[in-house]
Image (cartoon, rainbow, N blue to C red; front, top):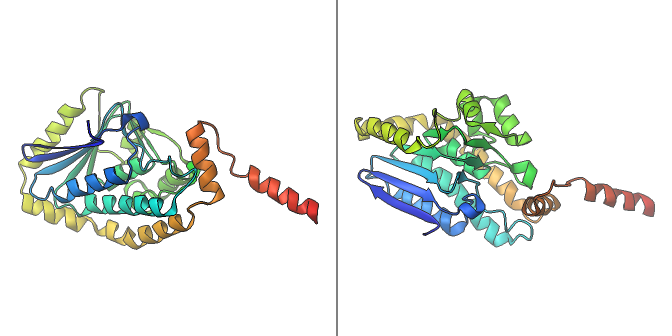
Length: 265
């Protein structure tokens, strides 16, 4: 099994993230594979993005952040930017089929997709400030258009988790189905798309990208700030705490340093 499975099922391109051992967090090669698959889907009816093993996607892999390589992280962050852009620029509808956790950058993939269907056991939310990062590729900008500014800030800044039913009420997903009924529901949506004009679906999608384009400069500047923060104390502590499965202590080191400085004075 490859880390990203790309399959053409009739007129639909299925992209399945297959790293359940890390909740389908993607690395640079996986991001590039997904970008190529989306960009090559112009001749399809639609694209379905999904995960395996009881998770949708946990965003970019965090195993590098505890001891970050600036060059490698720059490549991964930039590829993440390209991936969400590819989804929005794809002339065909892109549907997120969510079964399990959509967290961090995975939640932002849901934001980027045109439609989203989730099982009842699915959960949604950002992880940024909790793990020494920030959701600048959708959660801090485009998400506000989808669910409202206050709710978007709550999700992006406080890192709360939301059930599928809550995500539906917020407007983050289009439909919630019983566990085990996801493929049937996706098939129903794809059948509806297949009956429509591809040309005018493309026009409608590109025209509806107004708010995406309004967010583009903000995403680029946010990405730049993330890159400048590579190797920061907060990034290292957040990633290390995540990997060690403990609560992060972002202020302990600063307080100790301040106390030492005060003692020296």
